[in-house]
Amino acid sequence: MKLLKLLVASFIAVSVFGGASSFAADTISQMRNADILTQDAAPRIPKVVNSDERQVRNYPEQPPLIPHKIDGYQIDKRLNKCMTCHSRTAIEKSQAPMISITHFMNRDNQFLASVSPRRFFCTQCHVPQTEAKPLVENTFVDVDDVLEGKTDK
Amino acid sequence: MFSAIKRFWQVIRKPSVHYSLGFLTLGGFVAGIIFWGGFNTALEVTNTEEFCIGCHEMENTVYQELKTTIHYTNRSGVRATCPDCHVPHNWTSKVARKIQASKEVYGKIFGTISTPEKFEDKRLELASHEWARFKANDSLECRNCHSEESMDFTRQSVRASEQHEKFLVSGEKTCIDCHKGIAHKLPDLSLLKEGH
Image (cartoon, rainbow over all chains, first blue to last red; front, side, top):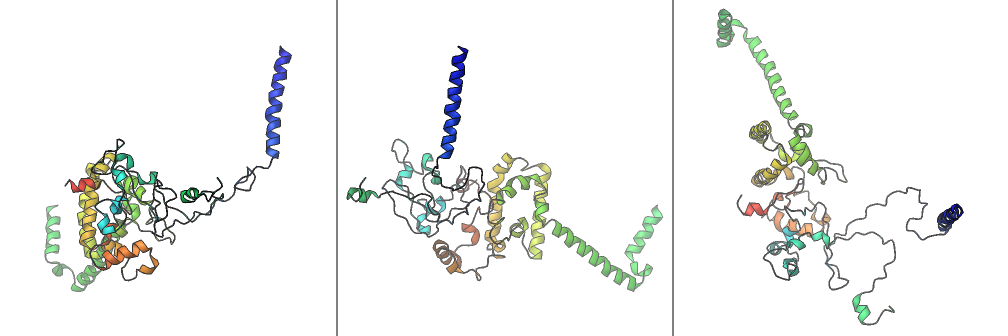
């Protein structure tokens, strides 16, 4: 019985540590080309796109991107800074797009008189973009191209 | 004791009988410089960030909020401290504001905003006072640094330059109308419409 335990233990040890050493020997693809213990400098914070030009939506349900800076915009239970321009009553002055009618719908698809609490926190879905270079290649295919069969997928 | 008071009164009543005119003139001149200088120095001490955040009411709330904004740290290293925005720069308005601030001393003594909860309850009222002040002086404290004449709209984003041209140049709005809550968190503005 003791012998069996020893055998099992040594088998586990070999499989774990042996496996680990062979794993480390493999060259795995990584985004930062450095040893695990090296501490490389943090990348610079990329600039936020502030063109103020609407971006194409990659699929119809995509929440529109924010084409401007939103630094320091307060969105909490007291106030929503975005609504100073994008609310129903503000757009005449601001000429910004109004938040869509879906934001007034509750979970039963009933339209409320003002923004539904579940749609209050803009940045849950809407985000600004930065000029950062993508770390990996993006293979996204637009749905129109899919429809026209321009893809082999 | 009584005679000492009597003598003091006589000197105060007719100083020129007891002291030479030259002494009184020069003495008055020197004393004037000392008192005026001392007054202004004391006034300047109350006009520093250190003095403002000497109380926990300011340090733990509005100062912490300021720290996250561009008026605290930015690319060019120019910092706006509390008095830059909250105390008028010219002398008469400054003194008027300092007299008003006696209400703040009262608030400190009686702990009007001594806890975060009390402060939150008062936030709308206190902010409204500042907005009213900015509105009345055409955002003077903003314009002490950000002057309309030296503002290059071509260097601004499209959105900013359009808005500035439309509302700032026309004089339709003043800085504070749009730039509320740039240094501190905003209160619930919907309460304002309800007339609180």
